[in-house]
Image (cartoon, rainbow, N blue to C red; front, side):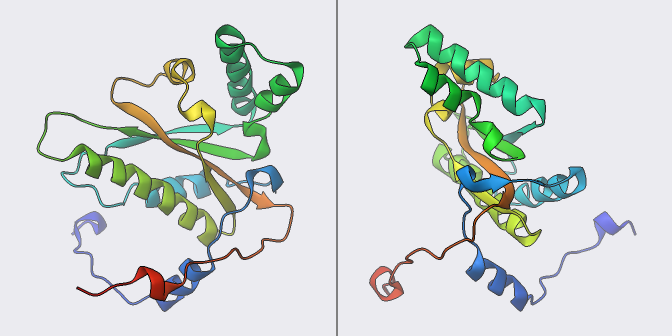
Length: 198
């Protein structure tokens, strides 16, 4: 029997709870290298592709930005702003370096199929689960990650030049690297205030 054909059984992994309870985002502005190598990035994306997915639609895809691609994306952002609203030299410098904040950035594209029994909302939630799973997988491999959208995730010209089709949206840009500053714990919700019993 091929390994892929063997049944999968749940197994206790208490260290995973420790991992989840220690996960926190690292600011993209404070990231440095190295980022994940090819094998590590493939692991992160494979883990992300295992999220719940009603109907097995795979209603998401990935666009990876590494190396020079990050600067090319920045040039594209500046060009889009110049064509649509104008841009100051200061703003152009910020946009040109937007993806250079981290060694690896992955855009998670949500792609909703309409007029099928699977609700669109569930397809969108699956893309959100992809983003969160990428954060956890990056953390598990010793990296920091940050899930951002920012203006470029919603700008029609940017989406067109990225090749997004009808029904596709950016669920998030996932920045992955090392933190150049110590991560600080942030306030967390009071669990007693957000849990109720029916």
